[in-house]
Length: 239
Image (tube, rainbow, N blue to C red; front, side, top):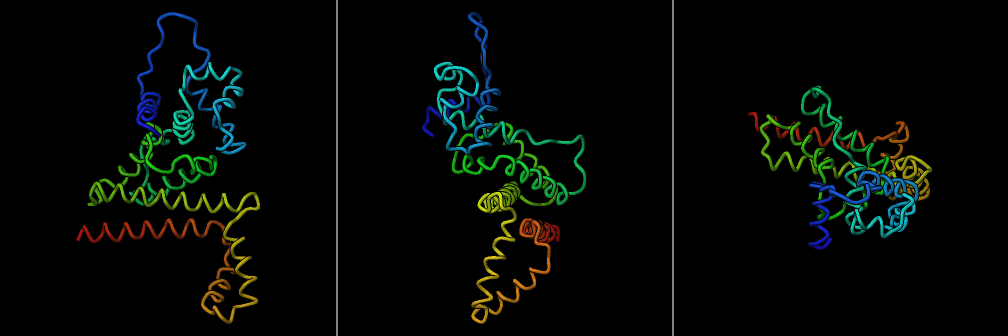
C-alpha cells in the first residue's frame, strides 16, 4: 500500500466523511460497500474480490463505486474492519485477566473462522481501523494491574493473535473435511505403522493421542500454555 493509499485508507476508516451539501442523494455508503465485499470473500475467497465484482453485487457501475472508494487496497481495509468489527464488550468484564483473555481469544478465533480470508488480508504493515484496534485495546486492558509493562502486554496480545491465526490456518488447510488434527493423526498413523521402529517416541505419542477425542486439542493446549507462561511471569514480578 503506497502513501496515497494509506492516507485514503485512514480517511475512510477513521473519518471525517463530509456529506455533500447539494446534489443527488448518495445511493451507497461505506458499510454497504464493505459488506458486499465481505459476502464475495466469504463465498469465493479474497482473490475474487474486485471493484467490478463489488459494483455488480451492489447493482451500480464501477465508476459509481469509485466515487466512494478509490481502489481495491482501500476496499480491503474497509472489509477487514467491518468483518472483524468492534470487540463485543459487556457492561462489566467477568473474571480475572486469564478468564478475560480466554474469552477474548475464543471470540477472535470465531471471527477468523467466519471470515478465513481475513488471514490473508491482515498480513504485513497496514492501516488498522477502529473496530480491529478495539480488540487490541481489550487485550491490553485485561492485563492492567498485573505488573507487566505496556510493551509486555502488547507482546502478549500479539502472541495470542499468532496462536489464533495458526489454528485458523490449519483448519482452513484441512478444508471441509474437518479436524486438521484428526487428518494429521491419520496420515502419521499410516506412516508409523510402516516405519514406527525408526520413530519410537513419536509412535508412542500418537498412540496416546489416539485415545483422546482430539477435538480442538492443539487450540486449547496452546492457549493454556501461553496463559500459563503469562501467569508465571506475573507471579515472578509480584515477588
